[in-house]
Image 1 (cartoon, helix red, strand yellow):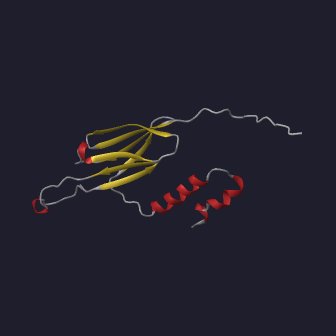
Image 2 (spheres, one colour; image 1 turned 90 degrees about the vertical axis):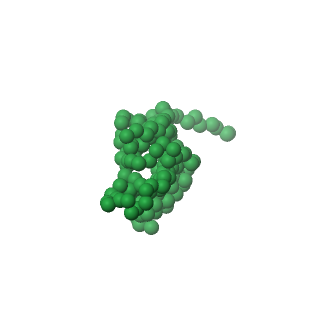
Length: 143
């Protein structure tokens, strides 16, 4: 593990971040194995709204499944059988099965998913909890 992703060095300064650090380590290992199909964008629409746009030309609504498994947003596509390969003079449009995962923070919720004109758009909202900037903790004396 490279020093960049060595989260053990934060142990003396943090409490309760173990799960998050483990998730980062898993994601860093996954990045090396990431495939590039289908192509996608992640856009920030406002301070707390995001959209994942995924190019899924050739897939029908019934071919795509969007699920939330714990904190993993999983988008899967099952391509339908097409004409025999011999009927193509050139085949440059990929239409193959795929599965792509996105790890969501605890405070991110899925608002909607829409398929239009070969683009799958998944709306996300960052549900930031309002917290006081400073909170005084009263001391209890056990004298």
